[in-house]
Length: 202
Image (tube, rainbow, N blue to C red; front, side, top):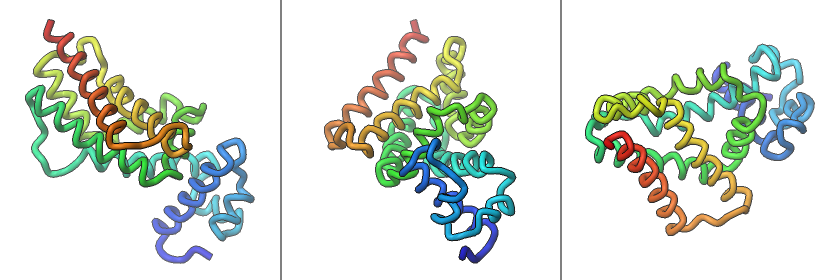
């Protein structure tokens, strides 16, 4: 039986949801399986969450907040194009390794983002977690008028979608992770961002 604070109980329940979805997918998720995995009665779900959908959404946001932490620290927000690229590179490495080190969360995160659950409303709420990253984009925009053609949320999804897709392939055995492949991914990411910036300069 789950004990402790309500926040701890919710976290344990959400982690149980992650394990169920990682094993069975969303189509195989049932409250019966979830309750057995969490070690609680099925009715406990409705004490901590409004519905099964609320549980699944909040589980996604829990992972989102953990990822967002890599884009928020006490460092000064960069302003020059070179500093911006290095900022994104450093955060990307932390983000990518988080996904590799947490394969069950990566499976959940990827499957959620590629499901009908990832609605426009959810996407808008997700973006609010990435305040530091949004500031970087604002600085980039001030320097090169980046978002005149590329909205900031497109830049964010360029990074997240590319990264989660690669990590998903690694954790499911579709491709291997090596220092070389990681460096190639970094080079591709930075090359893409540099190209977008150059296009704005022309």
